[in-house]
Length: 371
Image 1: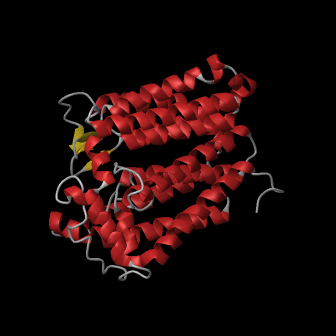
Image 2: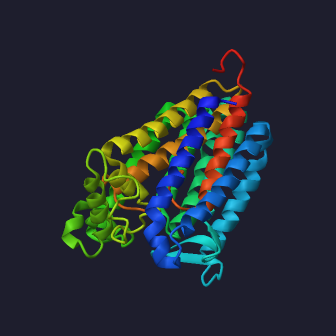
Image 3: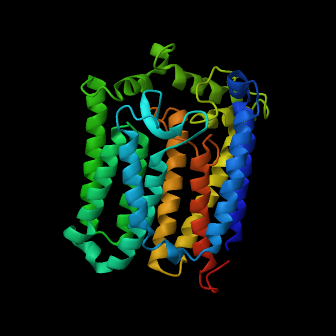
């Protein structure tokens, strides 16, 4: 087992719980009368997730072969279930229906399972194809078709950020798996063109979903008490921290000024309480974990193990980057959580399971490469 990767994972989990306790206290007290409510729930899931991580790390990662199809089938079923009209198990929040479960008791996002399903399925099948990845029929079409189906289902929720994450993770796995260079160039150009077209159509009001967010992103202060409120408060929160921060637990913006302060916008609270230096330290820890993960991928025993780790670390890197970019106003606001920090028990458990997969791959690295 790779000790540096394990230590960094445990460190991020611990810091995430501490920051969640601080960020969620006012909201939890307002909602339930117990300021530790959200923290205690997250801590329970953290313990479950850590146990799952250690169990998964002990299991030979080759056992994940073949599980990809089952996970894809489960993910598609759940993604269809969540968009069925009048489904009592579907939970709507902020005009998006992305969750299944019983509100206030247990809920999860099927998209989290879809991310893991894509990683496992792509890694398993791509690792077996090798030179067939150079062909359109076997190396491109099946994967693009699957991503398209998942993407359509997720956009019906709608869940733009989750769709982008899954598409990007799948694309990276295809590239690492041996897809032809010119197809990569065409794909990147096509996706960039579609993204640019989406932004322009949203700005013009042709596409209603995302139009307000694009307009607000350009100037959140123009509609401060409307669509721009969340981003404006996030920027105020970040700026309030200065270089050293106001101190852990002493942040003011979390007192119901900043929306989603313990969820998607928890990094803003990190910046306010720990300052620029504290935020940079946390970003450094994330970077060290991601780089160590890719180091494990480079030294994996086989293609399947390498692709598994690449998929997991790509997903983690992109989600972390997008969350920080959203709260700091570099990209339009969209619902995307910060790994290890944002409130969400099922998401945390699945993140730790993914870390367990990476640790499982690291356990079987050739002795000469480990260290």
